[in-house]
Length: 287
Image 1 (spheres, one colour):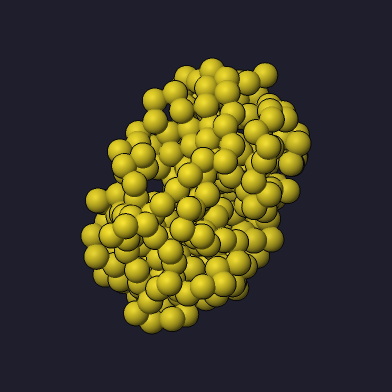
Image 2 (cartoon, helix red, strand yellow; image 1 turned 90 degrees about the vertical axis):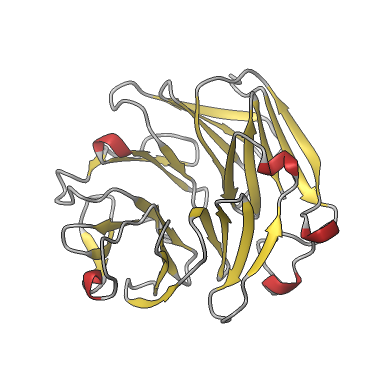
């Protein structure tokens, strides 16, 4: 086992950066010269790589790498390969969501299907097809802090939480009364305090953990990708700059510059406590 050519794990040379605790407010996050984040490598994994589809980490530091040839690999925090999941019945998965690391979701966007795996990448029950479950226009899913599933129902205009059997547990009021035009979430994030729907052009829509809409956060420019952790939003804009904002502190937004090793990478993804990049045959985890 070992599909990965090189994974590097980095930590900030400036001190505390993306801690899981966020003891410092966003305005005091350390940086290097001219607000450029300073990063250094602490771990490297080796192997072979091709056909990368997605990658992520969990709060324990485990790394998950998804390939287009229908398999997922897990590496532990020390960089050792642990297990692999593979299947050829559902087509290619497009996303892997790790959440707390105890349960993982594989999302097959083309087929509106979710597959649940445990921490050993063993399959939990059968696949959940959202079309069959009554949500034919649910184009994006998110993992709840409790392991259930968030989706935005574009027919009913509601954010909904469902269980792995497809039963509705929570739902918002109709969102078409809150926004003009079509609302389309590219991500749904849940840190156990807030749930945030990410519309790349309209901004962030904040809900409580019961699915009730609280407020909209406007941002300048497009949101390429976002991450929610400990009441703090991080997102990457169209210039490949990092932004941070504490949800409950108005006017707390800060902007940071990635080093060129990040900004010029082939792929960038925010993850627990940091950022991952893919550059050619190399995937890096930076903190």
